[in-house]
Length: 95
Image 1 (cartoon, rainbow, N blue to C red):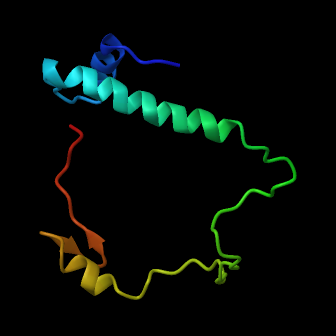
Image 2: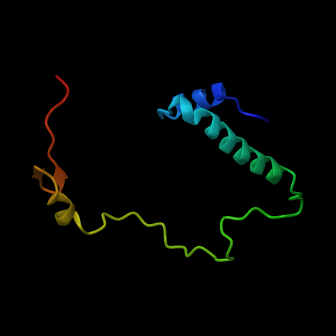
C-alpha cells in the first residue's frame, strides 16, 4: 500500500491536524514506512500463540464483588457546591 499526498491530506483532515503543503511529501514517506512495518507484522505466523494481555505472566488479584458506599460520603460531598444529607443537591432542570 502506498499513500499519496492526497491520502495524507485526508488523514490530516480526519485527525484535525493542519499540515503545511511543503510537509506533505515527507509525511507521505513516513506514513508509508509505518504502513510497511505493519504489513511486515501481518506476515508473522502466530498460529498456536495464545493471546496475551501482558508480556509478564501475572495473575490479576481479585477482590470480592461487594456493593458499598465507600464510607467516604462526607469527603465526596465536600466537593459539591450544595448537598442535602448524603446526596448532591442540584437545580431542577425539568419544568
